[in-house]
Length: 122
Image (cartoon, rainbow, N blue to C red; front, side, top):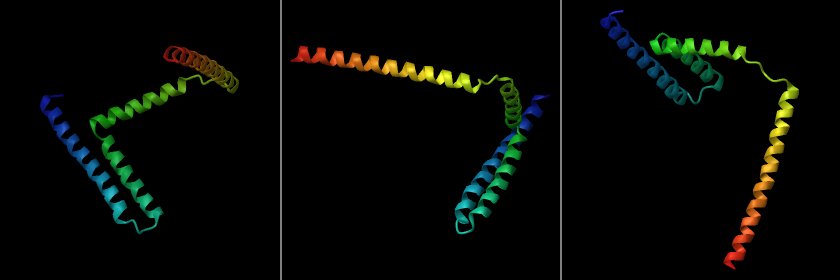
């Protein structure tokens, strides 16, 4: 790709992002302007505007790279081996026990230090 073509793409990307920003502003202002209309119609309008804005954003270079990243992340999430219910319960119980033991240790240390300070101060 020549530098001229890259510069042209970036100008069009800037224009596309400007369209996305305008669509978002139209959605926000329109939602305020039509506050008296039923909520269902406003939500449907916002969904349509958001879909159009997302489509335009995905046509940019950064939007395409974001879409590729999202697809790769979904693929990686499918590879994760999730713990069973029993493993999750056991791990949670261990964490709760450690937190309780640490809380008791810190409470005891705090009480001891408080007692020592009160002896020194008077």
